[in-house]
Length: 311
Image (cartoon, rainbow, N blue to C red; front, side, top):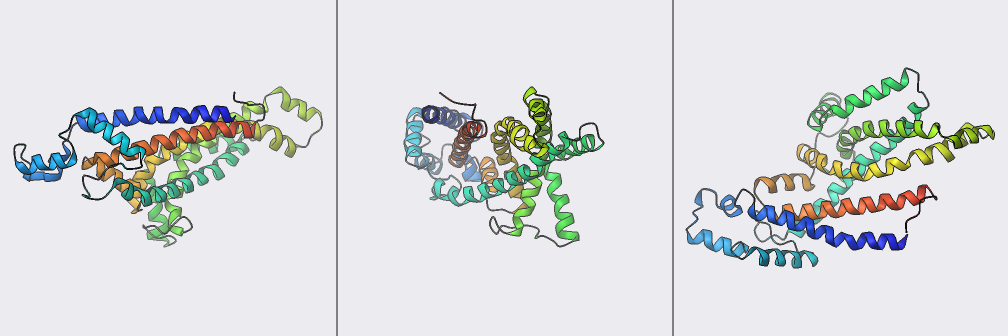
């Protein structure tokens, strides 16, 4: 196991190097000149102001030197300075916001897991009854509603009509204001997990070892927990890493709408303002999180099912 983990971690720098190269290349040769965005109407390609600003940002140097300097700085945790917030290191701008976004996404994932897995396991046992298609149809409807629609609808009920929750803002993980992003971001995940858990549970219930356990006279509770649930949840572990990655993008939208001081507003504003140092830093952080999430999923396989071993 440790050898497998070491090999996966050794591939992480290679992957991040490839991601950084693609992102850096798009930032340098993609549409939109950050100097032009920063100067606005004062932009003049031949003016001394434009040339001096381009020189200060290092944009007049050869591409290879710019990229080498960026990689060397990133290895030391220095992602450069923001184009929009002059004099502010990107790492300082992102540190506090990453922690806020992490809490929002964890809260949404908890909602998806706590509701989705038990509900999917339950309706699998109700196959053939009206409960099964009703829950699946409801899950499909909830999954199809965009977060831009669900957040205003949720706020209309909980904030404007009943005054149960604050309309916006942030107070930390244990503050009531986290309920809105957790529910609106977690419900689409609930819908997906319900369908996946139902299908996985039905597949396990049809296996021979389940019939053998029933023939031995084991109780229904023991069979459900020891044999069905533990085996049914194995395919779900793979999906969780992708679910968390998907929540990152929807979390940006939720943070922007609800006024949460996470990476959402900063990322969206950086895209419109061509603030490439922030965009590249967010991309590298997201790629790192995605790789580590997949590694944790692989490790969780062996914890859930002792038959799975990595060489």
